[in-house]
Length: 67
Picture: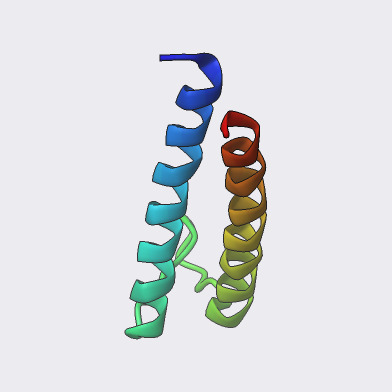
């Protein structure tokens, strides 16, 4: 397995995890910081949406480089 393939696999796994977290937020999940302060879920959803867009871009770039 090449380093590029390893990076691609890592990015794809991270994308799956991020999508799972987004799904949990969409189902109403709430998270809190260690001190008990609630996380602003709308901001967290926006942040995770941006992460997915970035991961999609990076995955596509690596896949094009392979092909």
